[in-house]
Image (cartoon, rainbow, N blue to C red):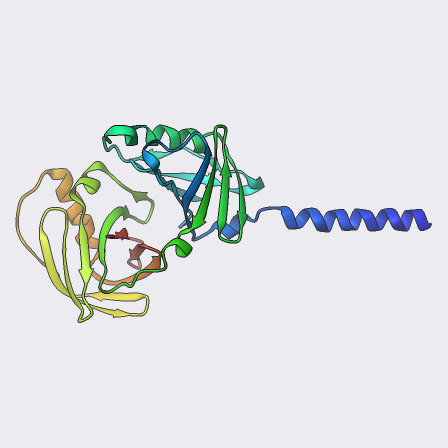
Length: 255
């Protein structure tokens, strides 16, 4: 009986100990991590590698050239990345190889381990140490910051494009509520009221210059996202604004 009791105790201790070492996928939700070191094959061009888990089940990635997004399953301590969609920018110098490095890492079903604010991702050729972006760069203020649009949000997807990256739409909301910016084609101005995590945009007046069709599509998406009341969330140097119907923008603070 004593032996059975000791055996049961050992089984219980083993179960309790192993459970604490399991990474919890939900701990990644809503967080963005930026690489601080690479052991193994380095990032061509120096990176850094940015991994964003802004939405559950979706991964955003950037290593210095194109932006990529893909569905991801973070269970079992691995990043099982689905089909990746990327922008199609041509990069020069060593950065031209950054996309292949990033794709090789993510498509190798790398393991991951989270220790507080440090994420370690281990692939076939490299082990990357990343730090929560909030630690490296605290949340920027909505007002007084110049924000550049990096992605368009619809009810179904978050998308980027070469036209978006080259046209670089941007906006800035002054402390007095005055809004200025560019759609990537035309400049605009107007007023907005910021109340916590809500922004109420008034009508925006724009110039009337004609641009290539793909840039005009970007302009229409930007103006549609900045119409009326939007919800704003800031994570380090990135901001997401979305309307109630899911239409919105992802933006990055200009250094």
